[in-house]
Length: 405
Image 1: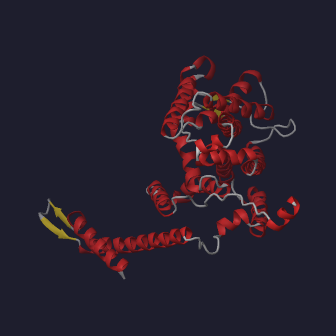
Image 2: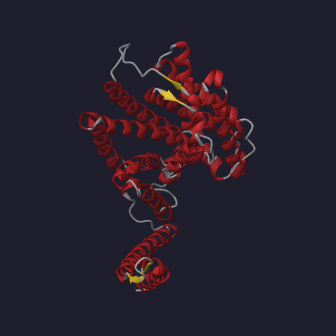
Image 3: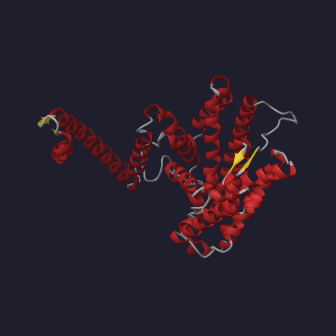
């Protein structure tokens, strides 16, 4: 009832504040004043519904947080069970794989292209999740490693004629190298200071690509990059797109497998310890330098890998594709999905890439709806769509005591 009263008060305030704009209209030609009271009614009803739903969702979130603090979380949500319960994720994963395999057969070329882009961002977000989500190192220049991979393939293909599969590991290796190059001087930094340094690194890479025209061809970029070939055969554009789609499916599965294994490994637990408390982590004997550099190198390696794929897909690269906006978008995918959660990051990347495409029918308002949806999700789910769950280890006390005796 209290929410109902507050929603009515809010709607009355909105009607009062918007009255001069929405109701009164002065026609200076005919010198008459028009009173549009229906507009006031629409504003009041809209404000009431929005305010009531907003307060209801906030109260539900508050109740959930209180239950979580009291240790009475109740039944885990579907998304949590999707990432932890084998009985749930096995059939869902099988269904997704079948649907993904059949997608090029039923989808148009445009839709397949959009899906390839979405899958590239899934891998990029999973790579950044290693650095930001698991290690707690805020990086704002992630697109620089992406650019390193893309230009590696573009230049090696343009000057030396090297193919996609040859350059793929080289791009990942160079990405890792640049990750270590960035990670070494910023070992003592964290938080906002680390974010500023990495932002500067991203801008340095972009400016070098723009101004080193003799090598990178400057703002014009490198064009005519070869698409991936299948066993030496050159494919048509449509066949090459489908081929690239299946390559991305394989790379996404490989990334999920590797990141999941890393997360539950010794180095993964060291990353999470570093994220929670750096001093305590060091006091426990964990090598902070090695742990940070490993996170930087592995995160950057996936970006370099995807840079090669991006260059092979678009057959053209220029510095405008690797701006700060690109880094911010990939970071938003990790934050929206849930830092440290693999399922959440995959969902976050798919939502942020596919949602603007679904909203193309509302072309004038699509970015407004997109931004509003992000604000609503982050207010109601500040921890992300799927919270990162820690691995639980159960020790059977009786058996442990018996083994000790």
